Image (cartoon, rainbow over all chains, first blue to last red; front, side):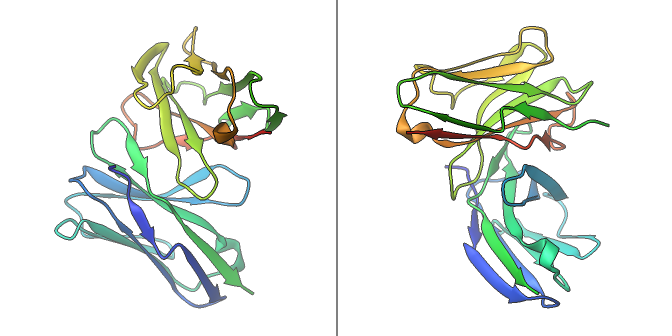
Amino acid sequence: SQQGEEDPQALSIQEGENATMNCSYKTSINNLQWYRQNSGRGLVHLILIRSNEREKHSGRLRVTLDTSKKSSSLLITASRAADTASYFCATDVTGNQFYFGTGTSLTVIP
Amino acid sequence: EAGVAQSPRYKIIEKRQSVAFWCNPISGHATLYWYQQILGQGPKLLIQFQNNGVVDDSQLPKDRFSAERLKGVDSTLKIQPAKLEDSAVYLCASSYRDRVNEQFFGPGTRLTVL
């Protein structure tokens, strides 16, 4: 399977703390994206990092990509209760579609 | 700009019954995707359309699932007959033809097969 795998499966932190989740994948990729999914709602695109990039920032989000290790990490700084959601990485292998990982369930406790 | 619309939001059926889901993509988006998301897993692509043509349906269980996008806009996904393992959320997404990395997702239809 080309699907990524997120780690940890579940994460619980206090509001204001940082949250880090990781994604590992198996094959070479064109790019990798992170998505957020709130309970009972659709997926929302957070950030895209291309294979020739190593780090990218967007607001409180920081994404890193290590193609040699076939892994990526998503860091959410100064977390808020509203960040409670499931986070998925999605890898683009073919340039035409991408494959979602299994997700990390993040709970931010107020 | 209106988002991707899906209906119904919830559906409960008995096994062996049939069910259909509807999706209306964002205006101007030529590419439309149907994903299946089983509880606790990430979404899995079932079928991808470019206008009214199928780009990829390699993961669509064609013995029971079918999808169409006759006029290149709205799409329907049908399951006939449904099995217990089809219980999942069915997500529709759309994108511009040359921006497959910028997919916009609808809220999904939660299917429960009893």
